[in-house]
Amino acid sequence: MEFVRPLPDYLVRRYQGWKATSYTENRAWYRRLADEGQRPRAMVISCCDSRVHVTSIFGADSGEFFIHRNIANLVPPYNPDGDHHGTSAAVEYAVTTLKVAHVIVLGHSQCGGVAGCEAMCMGHAPELEDKTSFVGTWLNLLRPGFERVRELPDEDRTTALEKEAVLVSLENLATFPFVKKALDDDMLTLHGLWNNIGDGTLDAYDPASKKFVAV
Image (cartoon, rainbow, N blue to C red; front, side, top):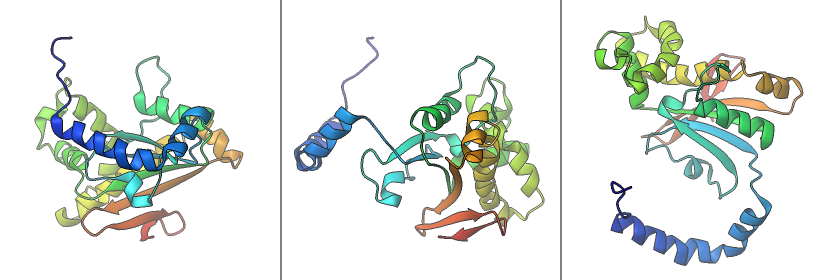
């Protein structure tokens, strides 16, 4: 494949630095992970946004989290149509093979995907409504959430929609039969979180109050 190029020098240097320090200092742990396989306690579904650093937020080490990232941390509803479903496949693997005890949906502030969905739903992003747009088709998953916050003032709507992305994903997770069974058997819990990038705060969805509250 002649279009593939060598890794940029700055990434090579960063890798070499990691190998000489963090890896060398924890060599036994990495070898144990390799020999014994992964046993993560939780799956985290987060946004692709480069500012969302899941392992840093929770101070996690290698092997602790099974992480799946996509645009706007969305989970589609269960739809076994024989097509390609990366997020659904990750959920299935985490729940049925790895048997994680927790699935966490992590949303965040200033989410470009959510902002794109808001613009599309308000008719301000025709390029996303084009059937050839992978991003627009994906963000359609969030339309039910937009309808719930449509009437909010402009200054409140975007943040509310970011949290709706978490709630829509949790609702859709519950449509997967293997997720529902694990929930019914008390083998799995679902959690919804929203991270304010600038403030470093973390809010968790509280089903009793039906609100996100500070952790």
